[in-house]
Length: 223
Ligand code: DC
Image (tube, rainbow, N blue to C red):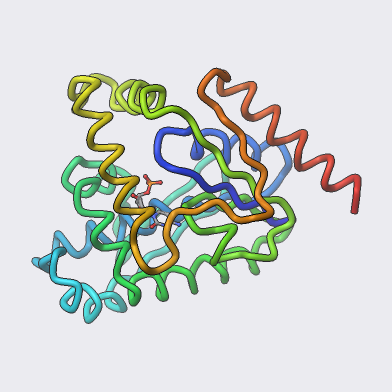
Protein backbone atom coordinates (compact mmCIF):
# COMPACT_ATOMS: atom_id res chain seq x y z
CA UNK A 1 0.00 0.00 0.00
CA UNK A 2 1.74 3.14 -1.23
CA UNK A 3 -0.11 6.41 -0.64
CA UNK A 4 1.13 9.58 -2.34
CA UNK A 5 -0.08 12.87 -0.85
CA UNK A 6 0.91 15.99 -2.78
CA UNK A 7 -0.10 19.63 -2.74
CA UNK A 8 1.15 23.13 -1.93
CA UNK A 9 2.11 24.26 1.58
CA UNK A 10 -0.54 24.92 4.19
CA UNK A 11 -3.06 22.41 2.87
CA UNK A 12 -2.65 20.15 5.91
CA UNK A 13 -0.43 17.62 4.10
CA UNK A 14 1.85 16.78 7.03
CA UNK A 15 -0.81 16.53 9.73
CA UNK A 16 -3.05 14.51 7.43
CA UNK A 17 -0.29 12.19 6.19
CA UNK A 18 0.99 11.41 9.68
CA UNK A 19 -2.47 10.74 11.09
CA UNK A 20 -3.52 8.57 8.13
CA UNK A 21 -0.30 6.53 8.34
CA UNK A 22 -0.75 6.03 12.11
CA UNK A 23 -4.39 4.98 11.70
CA UNK A 24 -3.63 2.45 8.96
CA UNK A 25 -0.38 1.08 10.41
CA UNK A 26 1.76 2.45 7.57
CA UNK A 27 5.17 4.14 7.61
CA UNK A 28 5.38 7.89 6.90
CA UNK A 29 7.86 9.97 4.89
CA UNK A 30 7.97 13.78 4.77
CA UNK A 31 9.94 14.54 1.59
CA UNK A 32 9.71 18.31 2.19
CA UNK A 33 11.76 17.74 5.36
CA UNK A 34 14.46 16.12 3.20
CA UNK A 35 14.62 19.14 0.84
CA UNK A 36 14.76 21.36 3.93
CA UNK A 37 17.56 19.20 5.42
CA UNK A 38 19.56 19.50 2.19
CA UNK A 39 18.99 23.29 2.24
CA UNK A 40 20.04 23.58 5.89
CA UNK A 41 23.25 21.68 5.13
CA UNK A 42 23.98 24.00 2.17
CA UNK A 43 23.42 27.14 4.27
CA UNK A 44 25.50 25.75 7.16
CA UNK A 45 28.38 24.90 4.83
CA UNK A 46 28.64 28.25 3.09
CA UNK A 47 27.17 27.11 -0.23
CA UNK A 48 25.61 29.93 -2.27
CA UNK A 49 22.09 28.54 -2.65
CA UNK A 50 21.43 30.79 -5.64
CA UNK A 51 24.35 29.25 -7.52
CA UNK A 52 22.81 26.10 -9.04
CA UNK A 53 26.20 24.75 -10.15
CA UNK A 54 27.64 25.05 -6.63
CA UNK A 55 24.52 23.41 -5.14
CA UNK A 56 24.70 20.60 -7.75
CA UNK A 57 28.32 19.82 -6.91
CA UNK A 58 27.57 19.67 -3.17
CA UNK A 59 24.33 17.68 -3.47
CA UNK A 60 25.89 14.28 -2.79
CA UNK A 61 27.78 15.40 0.34
CA UNK A 62 25.27 15.40 3.24
CA UNK A 63 23.99 12.12 4.65
CA UNK A 64 20.27 12.57 5.23
CA UNK A 65 18.37 9.92 7.19
CA UNK A 66 14.59 9.97 7.76
CA UNK A 67 12.90 7.94 10.50
CA UNK A 68 9.51 6.80 9.18
CA UNK A 69 7.47 6.08 12.32
CA UNK A 70 4.40 8.36 11.92
CA UNK A 71 4.10 8.87 15.69
CA UNK A 72 7.72 10.10 15.94
CA UNK A 73 9.20 11.00 12.54
CA UNK A 74 12.86 12.06 12.68
CA UNK A 75 15.41 13.58 10.34
CA UNK A 76 19.18 13.74 10.76
CA UNK A 77 21.91 15.31 8.67
CA UNK A 78 25.36 13.76 9.11
CA UNK A 79 24.08 12.20 12.31
CA UNK A 80 22.79 15.48 13.82
CA UNK A 81 19.10 15.95 14.63
CA UNK A 82 17.84 18.52 12.12
CA UNK A 83 14.14 18.63 13.03
CA UNK A 84 14.37 22.12 14.59
CA UNK A 85 16.77 23.96 12.27
CA UNK A 86 14.98 22.88 9.07
CA UNK A 87 11.87 24.87 10.10
CA UNK A 88 13.51 28.30 10.33
CA UNK A 89 12.49 31.18 8.03
CA UNK A 90 16.03 31.17 6.60
CA UNK A 91 15.65 27.58 5.37
CA UNK A 92 12.07 28.17 4.20
CA UNK A 93 13.21 31.13 2.11
CA UNK A 94 16.01 29.14 0.44
CA UNK A 95 14.39 25.72 -0.03
CA UNK A 96 12.71 26.39 -3.39
CA UNK A 97 16.01 27.37 -5.01
CA UNK A 98 17.80 24.28 -3.67
CA UNK A 99 14.97 21.91 -4.57
CA UNK A 100 14.92 23.17 -8.18
CA UNK A 101 18.42 21.76 -8.78
CA UNK A 102 18.15 18.42 -10.68
CA UNK A 103 21.13 16.84 -8.84
CA UNK A 104 19.43 17.54 -5.50
CA UNK A 105 16.21 15.97 -6.73
CA UNK A 106 17.95 12.90 -8.18
CA UNK A 107 19.68 12.26 -4.85
CA UNK A 108 16.55 12.69 -2.73
CA UNK A 109 14.22 10.80 -5.08
CA UNK A 110 16.56 7.81 -4.72
CA UNK A 111 16.27 8.03 -0.91
CA UNK A 112 12.49 8.34 -1.18
CA UNK A 113 12.12 5.28 -3.42
CA UNK A 114 14.34 3.20 -1.11
CA UNK A 115 12.25 4.25 1.91
CA UNK A 116 9.06 3.21 0.11
CA UNK A 117 10.57 -0.13 -0.92
CA UNK A 118 11.77 -0.81 2.64
CA UNK A 119 8.48 -0.03 4.42
CA UNK A 120 7.15 -3.33 5.80
CA UNK A 121 3.39 -2.62 5.54
CA UNK A 122 3.39 0.23 3.06
CA UNK A 123 3.92 3.95 3.43
CA UNK A 124 2.34 7.39 3.16
CA UNK A 125 4.72 9.70 1.30
CA UNK A 126 3.99 13.42 1.23
CA UNK A 127 5.50 16.04 -1.07
CA UNK A 128 5.01 17.88 -4.34
CA UNK A 129 5.92 15.34 -7.04
CA UNK A 130 5.27 11.98 -5.36
CA UNK A 131 2.32 10.94 -7.55
CA UNK A 132 3.86 12.31 -10.76
CA UNK A 133 7.54 11.39 -10.48
CA UNK A 134 8.74 9.65 -7.32
CA UNK A 135 6.12 6.88 -7.06
CA UNK A 136 3.99 7.03 -10.22
CA UNK A 137 2.63 3.53 -9.45
CA UNK A 138 1.34 4.50 -5.99
CA UNK A 139 -1.80 2.63 -4.94
CA UNK A 140 -3.63 5.83 -4.00
CA UNK A 141 -2.78 9.41 -5.02
CA UNK A 142 -4.26 12.37 -3.20
CA UNK A 143 -3.78 16.03 -4.15
CA UNK A 144 -4.68 18.44 -1.35
CA UNK A 145 -5.60 22.05 -2.13
CA UNK A 146 -6.97 25.02 -0.17
CA UNK A 147 -7.42 28.73 -0.80
CA UNK A 148 -4.28 30.86 -0.34
CA UNK A 149 -6.01 32.69 2.50
CA UNK A 150 -6.83 29.49 4.43
CA UNK A 151 -3.29 28.19 3.90
CA UNK A 152 -1.70 31.40 5.18
CA UNK A 153 -3.94 31.37 8.28
CA UNK A 154 -2.91 27.77 9.03
CA UNK A 155 0.78 28.49 8.51
CA UNK A 156 0.62 31.47 10.89
CA UNK A 157 -1.13 29.25 13.43
CA UNK A 158 1.66 26.63 13.14
CA UNK A 159 4.35 29.25 13.75
CA UNK A 160 2.78 29.67 17.19
CA UNK A 161 3.35 33.41 17.31
CA UNK A 162 7.13 32.78 17.33
CA UNK A 163 8.01 33.93 13.85
CA UNK A 164 4.50 34.66 12.60
CA UNK A 165 4.35 37.63 10.30
CA UNK A 166 1.09 39.35 9.52
CA UNK A 167 -1.33 37.30 7.45
CA UNK A 168 -0.75 39.23 4.22
CA UNK A 169 3.03 38.73 4.43
CA UNK A 170 2.65 35.00 5.15
CA UNK A 171 0.24 34.65 2.23
CA UNK A 172 2.59 36.52 -0.12
CA UNK A 173 5.52 34.26 0.92
CA UNK A 174 3.42 31.10 0.40
CA UNK A 175 2.21 32.19 -3.02
CA UNK A 176 5.78 33.04 -4.05
CA UNK A 177 7.09 29.61 -2.93
CA UNK A 178 4.22 27.79 -4.70
CA UNK A 179 4.94 29.70 -7.91
CA UNK A 180 8.62 28.69 -7.72
CA UNK A 181 7.74 25.05 -6.89
CA UNK A 182 5.13 24.84 -9.68
CA UNK A 183 7.23 26.68 -12.25
CA UNK A 184 10.53 24.79 -11.98
CA UNK A 185 11.67 22.59 -14.86
CA UNK A 186 12.41 19.36 -12.97
CA UNK A 187 9.32 17.62 -11.55
CA UNK A 188 7.32 20.67 -10.48
CA UNK A 189 4.48 20.66 -7.98
CA UNK A 190 1.65 19.11 -10.01
CA UNK A 191 -1.43 16.97 -9.64
CA UNK A 192 -1.05 13.54 -11.27
CA UNK A 193 -3.81 12.74 -13.81
CA UNK A 194 -5.01 9.87 -11.64
CA UNK A 195 -4.83 11.75 -8.30
CA UNK A 196 -7.98 12.53 -6.32
CA UNK A 197 -8.20 16.23 -5.46
CA UNK A 198 -9.45 17.16 -1.98
CA UNK A 199 -10.14 20.85 -1.32
CA UNK A 200 -9.51 21.33 2.40
CA UNK A 201 -10.49 25.03 2.62
CA UNK A 202 -13.71 24.41 4.52
CA UNK A 203 -12.79 21.10 6.19
CA UNK A 204 -11.41 20.49 9.68
CA UNK A 205 -8.26 18.38 9.98
CA UNK A 206 -10.34 15.46 11.28
CA UNK A 207 -12.62 15.69 8.24
CA UNK A 208 -9.65 15.64 5.86
CA UNK A 209 -8.14 12.62 7.65
CA UNK A 210 -11.49 10.82 7.53
CA UNK A 211 -11.87 11.59 3.84
CA UNK A 212 -8.39 10.30 2.93
CA UNK A 213 -8.78 7.15 5.08
CA UNK A 214 -12.09 6.42 3.32
CA UNK A 215 -10.52 6.88 -0.12
CA UNK A 216 -7.71 4.45 0.82
CA UNK A 217 -10.11 1.89 2.27
CA UNK A 218 -12.26 2.04 -0.87
CA UNK A 219 -9.18 1.40 -2.96
CA UNK A 220 -8.15 -1.50 -0.69
CA UNK A 221 -11.61 -3.06 -0.95
CA UNK A 222 -11.61 -2.74 -4.74
CA UNK A 223 -8.29 -4.58 -5.11
O1 DC B 1 6.42 20.55 2.46
P1 DC B 1 7.45 21.61 2.81
O2 DC B 1 6.87 23.00 2.84
O3 DC B 1 8.21 21.30 4.05
O4 DC B 1 8.49 21.56 1.59
C1 DC B 1 9.57 22.44 1.52
C2 DC B 1 10.00 22.68 0.09
O5 DC B 1 10.58 21.50 -0.46
C3 DC B 1 8.90 23.10 -0.88
O6 DC B 1 8.80 24.50 -0.97
C4 DC B 1 9.34 22.50 -2.19
C5 DC B 1 10.29 21.40 -1.83
N1 DC B 1 9.73 20.06 -2.09
C6 DC B 1 9.89 19.58 -3.35
O7 DC B 1 10.41 20.27 -4.23
N2 DC B 1 9.48 18.31 -3.65
C7 DC B 1 8.91 17.54 -2.71
N3 DC B 1 8.53 16.31 -3.02
C8 DC B 1 8.72 18.05 -1.41
C9 DC B 1 9.13 19.34 -1.13
